[in-house]
Length: 357
Image (cartoon, rainbow, N blue to C red; front, side, top):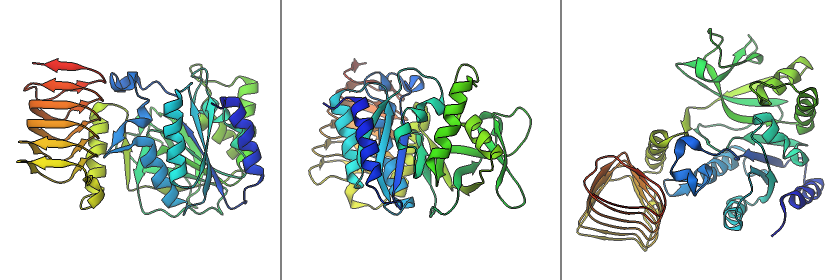
């Protein structure tokens, strides 16, 4: 296995051979996902499936479309990961024709610090995308802009970082969780920079000066510093911003993506088997799923090799190699290798659990 720091050196060599038209994508994903426990005790949050595909894979697919296939390299900022997880992330990059590189964030020191861990990729055209940010929108990225920040209007801006726009529709001010109204345009966690080295220098200066908020280096501080030095920030507004921060939000995001994919034949694997059952679309069934004497849907995702019988399930996520029998579930999440039998209406069960009620 290639060590993380060795891969960073390789990434610099890869970039030097890459066309200026190509884009480096940096995805910080080193958070612990505490609000998603027990599911994140065994699986990093960005790898939890949404409509049968990991969150981070959904993100990469959307960004590849927005960038019209120009992403050449993906830098995953991670805590130390098992080889199997690194292989999964590498495959996600390869699916869009990009190379994956891994950078270790040993301490949770904020958003700017996470990005700086991948500083070898902070050159040329770059996109920063936080791993639990999913979006929908008919967007064509204007790579001629100095910088672009993706935003969404929200009803309660005090919970977010926001931007204020001038008459020319360029950003005039940044505010982190403002207590009084500044703007209702929330930053969703997606950023484009035409010259990544400007961001690298701004973050480096934050770190050298020890500029922190609550012990963390914040990206909004780096952006404000860049603006003071003349950087012009444009914005693009998404039509839908989807969160995967907790169980309920993740189930809703699964519901929305199943809705987007309604009618897609790939939602039902050819090897899935349905016997004496009713499927109410949209539903995702992975390979070798078996459903007997059950009603599934709407908005249910079932991972590969899972067996369901004598059950009524709606608006739920059930992962791989699990067994659900004699159950009546809704608004639920079951992990991998779960064995559940019972009539509980709503449930959240992590991997390798058995629950019979």
